[in-house]
Length: 391
Image 1: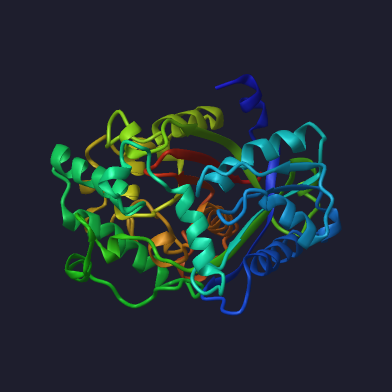
Image 2: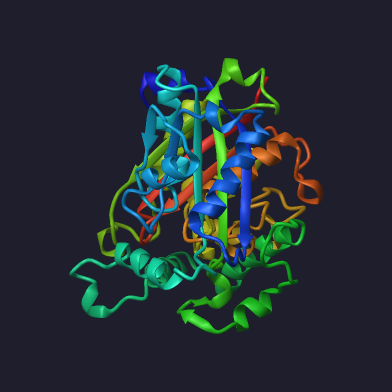
């Protein structure tokens, strides 16, 4: 990890968060609900939109999405970040935003995302645009993969073969997420869920049933970053960014050297080193759970348990409410919200937990959070950030 990355630790903070349109936002566009979440985050910070001079955003529906957002919000940023590496993008954006802030290029960065994937009248067109970005390599196309499920299912099947991971252990992940969602008024899926229901649900792609797969919802999320010295004077208790790291190794499942190891091994190690922390120092974990296997793989690759032990680690409600490692406390992509890309929602939930604003699902005494994003097919890009209560 570079000296520069170490110098960033605690130099910037997240001071405002907001969400909008989570679940079903009929009659709205991507930009409309993004704008609602953006204004909510800016207001939460005690700022106004005219104070925003930095922007980080991406969307599968447009290659030049930042230009759409700039125009719609009526801002003129001196820093713009639009790199799209899938759902991990908005966590990955934290590092360049921090560089822009600490260098003086800008003073307040808005990181934002919005999609009406579920309800928009443009859904068919958006789905086509998203699907084109998921097209398999020439080596995979003849087999007609059903991406993204097929790629992640291969990873799950290999993990089951190599380490003895069971379908029941995968189901534990879905049930834990639902347990948290039942405590979250904003979550889309809140009905009770049992392991048996997960196992008996229709098969989507072996070994996944429908309940091993993330939701398809609408939703927007946003957060505002400023330098730490300025954060002290704003409306909310600042949440400091201790570190952020991104790792990308491949594009398709055929490019993976080991189907049970993701780039989270690299991004996590770099993030922990830069923060000067270990997994045992983390109070709450927000992982991108596009599928149940994701949570198991990331718990292993980020160091919360050894490789191959993720299945046993999540047994008996270990990551559910009341468990030893609170994970995806909003319900995650499996039960809270998943509008194509989820990463920004994980950041929002981490900030709310560290502020103590989560009501029934609040993790007592939470002071440090790990946020981890996932993108591509499968797990091609990974981004890890470690956040802490200021002071």
